[in-house]
Image (tube, rainbow, N blue to C red; front, side):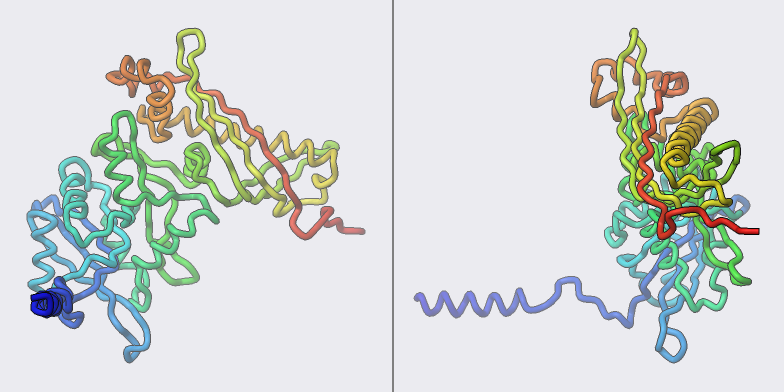
Length: 382
């Protein structure tokens, strides 16, 4: 009986464990790199533009092909694409979803519902908004020879955002979570078509501000860097500061090496105050003149001017978001919930108004670490 049982177990294992349950023929599929979603007001239809990976130059290099389809829902439009090219689209490698500016309200929810519900979509796919009239323009008008994969190019740019810090990538899971979180307003990066040495390329810069399910405004690239500073996602980038030493003014470009931002909600005289403490490590990257800001005296003056400059940038973007948009993109509400749960329950129903009037204290410490390879400014001798 023991031998029979062993034999039965082996046969059963061979029958059930020697194949892939979801095996698919690659040559019957098209791999989607990214997608742009628009809405045609006149025809009352969604327009879905899919970028599909293809082999070019005799099969030696990967490029892309675009497929565009329409439907009453996003899913309907995707199904139409399958009917047109006779192959199923595979979304497991898709990197980006680009939304048009008018994909708001119910349209935005519909698009997010499809990407969130379909099992093939990765939950870390990037969500962006097009700075052009249509989202499809980002895919159609860049790398016109189709010798590059636009979606992969944008994916790489977002992954390397730390060296630029003028945009901030938002994966789908976090965007959806923040959209439905009480008191929080998410942002998503903006992508446009730009000219680079006579070639059209996608360029990221700035953030779109989402309030509820509507795009209510935008941060430019400078404001976005300040925003990233506040939410403690700043890893690098440059800032230019004007300083004066011995009655001589000069512009100094500083490179950001690292940063730590801490939010702390305090109750002062029955009023909530949000304290922001910033400590940044910077180095002198360029001095636009022969003023010595490297030696002790000049460096101390530069340090104070850098701290004032950062403080001003931070305060300006906070005030603008408070007064113009009344939506908490900085997640101050999260800090208040954590530190003052009872107080949060009291102010939650009127949080947008409370946020717009919230007192914010900004403290900045700048640590100037070095001056690259040059220990003194370059001087021209007559």
